[in-house]
Length: 312
Ligand SMILES: Nc1ncnc2c1ncn2[C@@H]1O[C@H](COP(=O)(O)OP(=O)(O)OP(=O)(O)O)[C@@H](O)[C@H]1O
Image 1 (cartoon, rainbow, N blue to C red):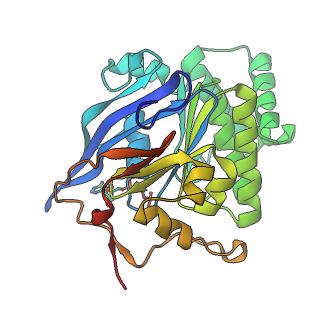
Image 2 (image 1 turned 120 degrees about the vertical axis):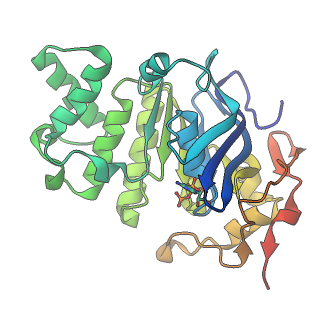
């Protein structure tokens, strides 16, 4: 197996992805040569603290990076096409249909003046053209039931829904066109713990039902461990460790992974991850992309322990 890959032919393969943000103080290197592969039917967790570059990678995969950010290198292969190299119209046709993103904070970006059926209907019709009203409504009701929402939700406005219900609507939107790959960026972080688990479980159930693959982005190592097949740990713009949940949790090899695991609070006091005693390097300085070594089959670790600065 080559680095960062999974058994069988991957559905998505990210190679040496590089994203910079231009700032007055110089370029911030937010993705510093990120490589990984996503297997068919697999859920890969991308975990790391705030600022490690998770959203940057998610946005770049769909070529949604906006200024001052720009993708300066790499490839994103979906099937036999490179998303980073294709024309804009071709790319637009593939987003949602082949690869869908549930962006961070998506539940707050639902249009407040549109009923759920319009939001979902517009999404479908943008890609598939005008649909007969009745059939469209039935399809939307089916989508809602897939994410455990009752039929009456079709006629509601976002403000009439709870946070968990809004997030379920966002999931329904992402799966409307039956994509092969779903990228969910912190899909549950705005919700309380009980709802988080329920919504995350729905996401996994739906993924399984559609036979799609998923990248689940999060900072909660404990929650991720319960949901994903493999974990990729991001630190300062690089994946520093990747492997099965079992390997990474039982035998973490990178100093930063160990810190993440040591920082897992007890179930009761789960809170956003802040690793206080690890200082991220200045992202404006050029850093070599760390080499990865395979410490066990499919378990890869960056040879960059030195980059992790630990106080105390
Ligand atoms: N518009 C921007 N201009 C400059 N730097 C940016 C910009 N957006 C992101 N960055 C920097 O890029 C790095 C990665 O940010 P990113 O949002 O991808 O991290 P993240 O791991 O997704 O964090 P979070 O969990 O908070 O979303 C950070 O250092 C951040 O400050």
